[in-house]
Image (cartoon, rainbow, N blue to C red; front, side, top):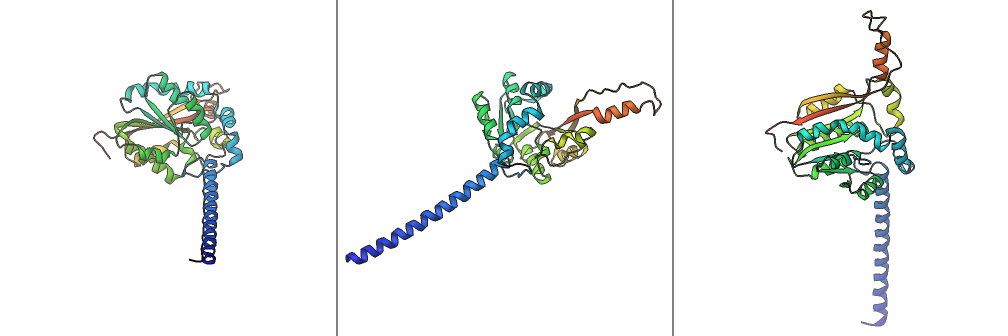
Amino acid sequence: MDLERQVTLLSHAVEELGRLVRDTQDRLQSVEAELRSLQASGGGSHHVDGWGPRFAAIYADFTEHFRGSTAEVSAKLEGYLPDVHRLVRQGGVVDVGCGRGEWLALLRGAGVAAQGVDANAAFVAAGRARGLNMELGDALGYLEALPPDSIDMVTAFHVIEHLATEDLLALLEAARGALRPGGCLLLETPNPTNLVMAACDFYNDPTHRSPLPPALTEYLVSTQGFGNVEVRPLHPKTSPLVPTGDQDTRAQLPELVAQTLFGPQDYAVLGYKLPGETR
């Protein structure tokens, strides 16, 4: 083969290599852009309106300001520990959307095996630094990857109000598949029967979709095969109005107003995988 032909072939090879490099760079940039978009929207397949890089950067401070301090949140979650001691065996607890890890820390202190998943990389890194079992990822994918019938309890605190209905139903289905027969799903979410919550406080979080009335959440949980579904009103505000004790409707108006405006701000729904059911 003469030198001129070798140079020509080498030139073509260099051009082809350059094209492949450019294509690879374009694909890498596309993947990086998609990854940044997913991280900004919550890190998973559930796109959440209101997420973006600027809001993601202040989300830890936002959580402290509106959700409350770690100590305040932990104090509220302690009320679920009797349920844990009643239900949890060897399968342990999976907490989806585990956030700052208050629930996981409580469970660790109670000697209960627990693991969590969250799409916020900063929260996961901070939790791991505290020795908590936290994974970075998408809640639905995480549940679907668990062995069937293996978990005693799946919990989600202030997660479902961020999800579209189809995504919520998929999450419920995946939770039921991962739970053992007799295992429990525990959801907590803002309570729109409190009018202050429904009309104002719910919208403090721009990533919330729409309030979920207790009857709707109870219904959706039951449609996905859970039984013995229980609704628990939680965390009433303190009312400045004092009930009169009079049975007259007009005299009871302050009490009725107080119940509507200062009633439970959150509620929990507990549902159980039916005994004998396996996936």
